Image (cartoon, rainbow, N blue to C red):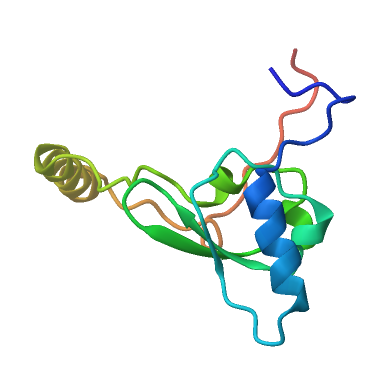
Length: 121
């Protein structure tokens, strides 16, 4: 369920302070944050964040398309390492058998088109 409109977007107050302080600096550094639940607001555009995903900090630079989303959406917490080796082997065997048993069909450019049958229903 989404947040009520009259409340406005949730942004961690400490994160807002850090962004305001960063805007006054001449050489901005990325802001480290653990607040994945904070909503990206227009003031964040152009700011770099290091968002914690539970294991490491993921560097993100905020653009206009990200406004309205949560910071956590841009630092995935799970990584897919592929299926088990047995699944890969089964897929390879199936691919090899389908290519060896399949007869070669003439290509469409060399085959002559059949005339259409007219009048049959």
